[in-house]
Image (cartoon, rainbow, N blue to C red; front, side):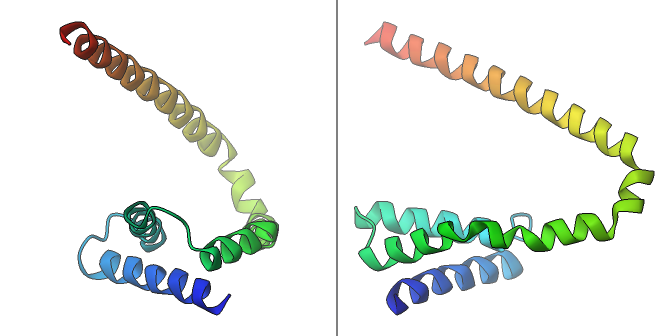
Length: 119
C-alpha cells in the first residue's frame, strides 16, 4: 500500500511541478495522470500496489464530491442570480463539444479510409 501511495504522490508532485514551472495551461493533476499513464504503458503492466491504491480510492470517490456539493450549497444564491448565463454556457459548450467530436470522428474515419484504400 505504501509503495502505491508513494508512486501516486511522486507523479502528483511531478505533475504539479511541471504545471507550475513549465506549462501552466494544464492543471497539475492532469499532467500527473498523463505522466502516470506513460509510465504504466512503458512498464507494460500496473503494479499490484498501484492497482490496490487506485481501487481503494475509487471505492470512496463519492467522498471527494462533498466539498464541491458544499460549495454549490454555499453559493446557491449567486448561482441562482447567474442561472441563465450558466445554462447558456453549458448549452453552448455541450453543442460545441458534440460538433467538434463529430467533425474529428468524421476526419479520422476519412483518414483511415484513405490509408486502407492505398494499402
